[in-house]
Image (cartoon, rainbow, N blue to C red; front, side, top):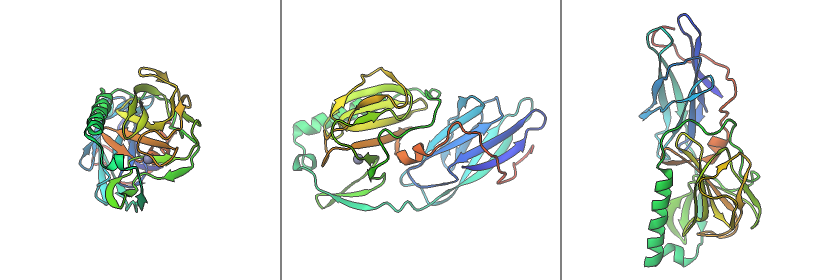
Length: 290
Ligand SMILES: [Zn+2]
């Protein structure tokens, strides 16, 4: 964990801002934690606005870096309102480094590269169901522990792979593939609410879980569902079983994480320590009041 800055608020308490990770890649989720304040802070990470949510000792904002994010330093600015004092600005820097995504060739059944009219319509209905499920209010986290792997961490394809399908450049892999035989357990990565359970053309049998804060986990290609829409799930609770439904070459779990409308690398979310006390290290002087 890299901590960004620390100040003594003029009278009452010590406020600190922490950034995880300190060095990120395009497509990562980045967590900004502000501790020791009771009033809602505001801030930006480069061009992106921070939506702070209340947590036990302060506030947190999770930011989805675009897969096209510019490499190099990105400025973090957080405006604090210490109790009874004037506003204080803290600043720091996130370093964004080259992701080095591999290229990979896949062969898939022709129906997935040349879908029929009926299949295209089905695909469009799936897209609508996804966007309806993702259309939620910003609410505080529904979880109180860090994210866990939905399967043992045997990654067969990481996030970001640039894919050539049947010899043509087709897409980028916006999730992580985890190994598993048909019928093996898939568990919820964290506590949340099941917002979609659906048989989809490309993603096969699909489960989406909302974890608060417009943060979702997605589980694709299942052979069997163990939950229904509206269920509240606990971390580690079984959602379904591994399968090979939809556009796949064999049984596996495709695990996705969507944050504020962007697919991010699930590995970056699994690495975040949301609830760990942080060791504040000053990186840059506050603009005032420090
Ligand atoms: Zn996948």
